[in-house]
Image (tube, rainbow, N blue to C red; front, side):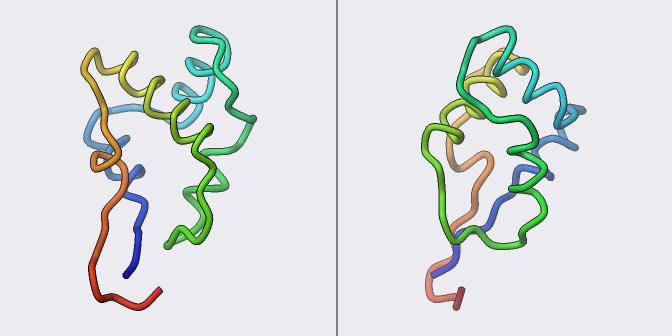
Length: 84
């Protein structure tokens, strides 16, 4: 199985920048999202370890920026049977 981050595609489709998501999470919503967390996540093709606190912050920030509830399947893709 393989979990693939589709956040880059989501950001492009919604005309959002990584910096917007991070700043919104930290400054507007007061969520615990480290600086450059998204850049580090986006630098990897496959996710091997996940920080659920960071993912929650990202989802909250994206929901705030888009005005709709963003879910895990909006930024991650699961492919059954694919090697990691």
